Length: 222
Image 1 (cartoon, helix red, strand yellow):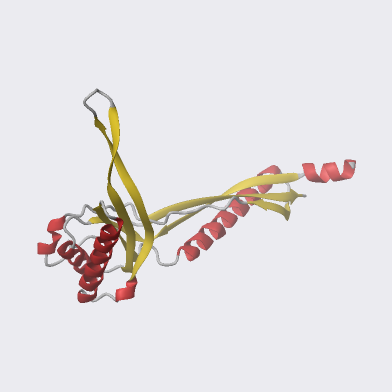
Image 2: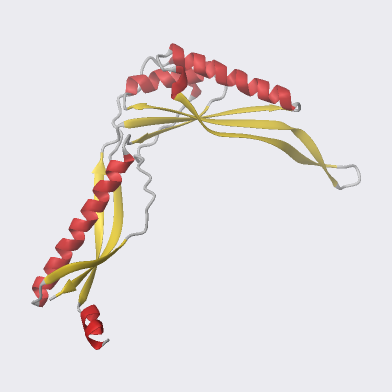
């Protein structure tokens, strides 16, 4: 027991920091369609009509019809409180609200972005749109972060051992809590429905994506 304890005591624990700066290469356009009607069937019919108009408009702008993906679909009953004559409140049914979330993704191309936004604003009265710049292969970015974290930890451990007059031994364990990186550029876009009058998007370059990850490593020291 004492020998095992001594071995365990002769270890070094280092936290590795992995950093990666990547250029965005993918555009995501998140679109929200909302339809409201006191009749469920009519709310659904209007929602489906919005979707068909959107698909046709994007197809006319050069996008495949199946490139528009659903990310969320929700139908709920909406109520509001109104005051009664006796000073109380009454809960009144307002109608069914159908919310359909959609996403259009394509390689970074500002001309295609302009075409997509013009198509959306041309077929929807009040489009709800969010544009973000991200990466097409987030797995590769995560792998790069982990490799950098491992290299950083080993370098730190070797420096500490050299300064302490000992030698870095075998790797005992690695502690890593899975991280969910949001690889999105900090560059924001304010979208106006008037973009349908624009012939082309402004010539902008999305900022790089700066990501960090961590992992802890334990080595034996000799």
